[in-house]
Image (cartoon, rainbow over all chains, first blue to last red; front, side, top):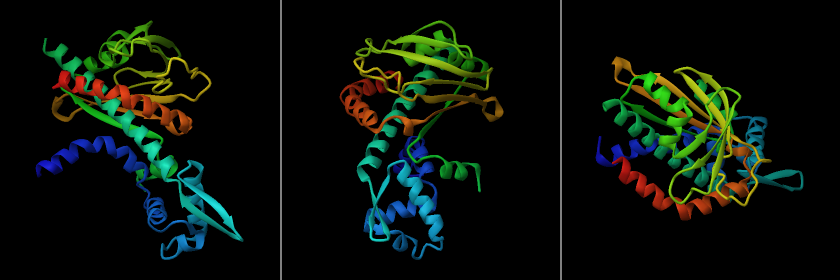
Length: 118
Length: 161
């Protein structure tokens, strides 16, 4: 493993929960599309996904519920857009909490191992 | 579908963090460090009054330099000797002027497992429930932490290295 890969692997525990939570491929795809092409209607978001419109709507509703996307009505269509600010705040906060726990876990390890060797 | 994939679908995307550390000591020793208030306080950086027991609320004060004005309340939920310990608290309740008591608390869980070949103990720490913490509070905590924690983290890195 290259040094940069090794460094990335060590950092993985911080990032893993975030990516695990985003690990649903359909939702990740929806966030990706909205990020690149948004705002988009449900019909547009369903195109080429091989997932039903109903399923896409459920995923969008779930994303909306936690504030990662927002929707606006245009005629009979619902147009979704990414609430990038919210995602960014939530992720930065989570990264920060993860960093605190990593530090605490390192202190726990040092505390127990010093005591164990003594 | 794996349990993890299922969880990813069910859980909001910014709700939890997980960290894991391998400790070169027997599980019974690690359990003591996690599940007794005195030892927990020593590595966590807090002075705690009382003992951990299911249903008990243990109050304490942060001892890390610069944070001595902060108190914390740990509401112990479940204690399964040498396996599992959990409590709820207000995460990063860092502004003493704010009353956090009406806000949701997060759940902190410690899981201990023996490593293969008697090589020590794996500790998994999960904190979840962040999506019920108001976004404004999370943004504020980040902002305030950003000023204070940077130096703290460097000190810790130096201490641990």
